Amino acid sequence: MPLVPWWFNFYSFERFDMETILLLTAVEADGKINKAGLEAATAAKNLASALGGAKLIAGLFGEKASSAAGSLAGAGFEKALAVEDSALAQPRYATDSAACEALVKASGASIVIAPAVSRLQRVIAGVAQRTGGKVDTHLTELNAEGGSPLITRWFYRQRMFAQIKRTQRPWFLTVDPGTCPAHSGSGSLSAEKIAFTPPATQTKVTGLKSPSSGAQTIRPDADLLFVAGAGWCKKQADGQLHVPEAEKTILAFLDKTKASLGGSKSVVDQTGEGAVLSFMGHLNQIGQTGSTPRHPKGLATCCHGEEPHVVGWRFITERRAVNLNANCGWAQGKADVLYVADAFKVMAKVNELL
Ligand SMILES: Cc1cc2nc3c(=O)[nH]c(=O)nc-3n(C[C@H](O)[C@H](O)[C@H](O)COP(=O)(O)OP(=O)(O)OC[C@H]3O[C@@H](n4cnc5c(N)ncnc54)[C@H](O)[C@@H]3O)c2cc1C
Image: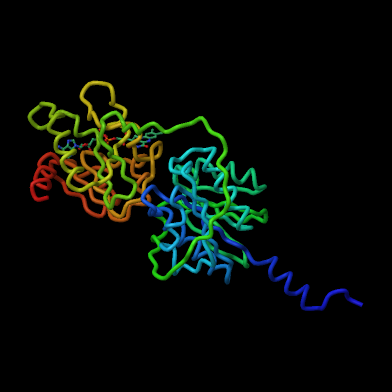
């Protein structure tokens, strides 16, 4: 004689099998979720539907965490949980990780999705460790296969990708910015505050320091990647160097367009020696041994377009280049448009038009 009715087991099995997805993101000082967080919300929503229906919960932390819940309305979140405390006004490992841990535990999530931004990347492994989970970072696609998540991550400087499944839960997934559209919804979603006592901490943020030049030139959210190559620091047709003019032209363009500045390895390696662009540093390097940013458009100037550089353009959708050499690498099928021209003149004219 069974001790429970037949439907009880069936119901329990169904509930056990259903994933609970927690979107874990920080709320900025202005009470808003940043673009990467809203993109992760889309990733969470898409995964829930690919799984044929999963429970979706939003987990927000910050000084004004609860005020941001409304911006997630319309994405299918059942509820939003918020950890709100003045200690979370500044990113800090001890306080952020404790807040995330509280959210994961309160949600009972089996899958945690967060944006792969520095604030979350710094704490996610620690939170996974505290909650007995596993973590995979910098993901570009979250799909489902056979009712389980199937995630994609690129390796070896974006030359090959792996698709990964795991049975262990909770499973923490951070999603690379630029891989999903940002969620923009309407409706209402209110936040339920979670009790939180911040851990004691001795770290205080006293201010921010910009890179050496004082100008912020790396802008991951920009629509355009502007690459400056070593040609800007080479002798030009008159046999002279024109580095101050190069600097002025590039900075004026960046100022007008708010494009993100990238550099070739040759130009960034010159830093500290001879004729250099003072605002160019190793963080600007694009390529095999540099970064692989995501921008809708890219414009390369005075850059030869060799394979180790262009491999960093994998996620640049529309590519243009300006080079004096009609046989440069960009002409070998690596750019949509190559202007065979003097970049000094082209960019001066572009600035004038802008
Ligand atoms: C293991 C390895 C890893 C590497 N990783 C990277 C990497 O991550 N990123 C990277 O960038 N490189 C990388 N490289 C180096 C790469 O192969 C190239 O050497 C480098 O990209 C060249 O930089 P460049 O095009 O700026 O310079 P150059 O090859 O010197 O080209 C300068 C270009 O400027 C043009 N030019 C000059 N004046 C003008 C003008 N007035 N108007 C228009 N055009 C002009 C010239 O025609 C020329 O094409 C790597 C190499 C190796 C071996």
